[in-house]
Length: 138
Image (cartoon, rainbow, N blue to C red; front, side):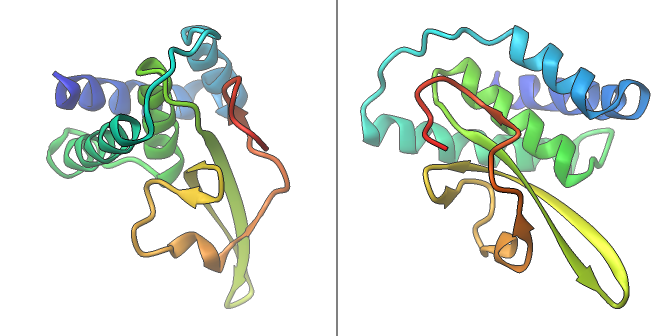
């Protein structure tokens, strides 16, 4: 079920980003999240985070669309929020060969959840998370 939700959400978020832009997409996603997050023990949350990350990556590999890191991260952030797991969407930039590049990832505390190889360390992150849920420190 989580794979199907990830695949559908990934496609819808990708389309929304193209047609409506980041802020409108983010606002729509945030409105559908409960601001009362149920408490989940650390081990359960860690397992749910890992499973959700695998399902979003599988949806990217096997789905109809191959979205940007922003679409993947927004989808991952939203799916975690739907499960009561607080997290932050982070965006960073870097200059590479006279070009400005951007990258998005999801973070909980100081840990990047969808960056196993710590790719995000090559980017200067904006000071605050762009989308966070109550209970998540900034």
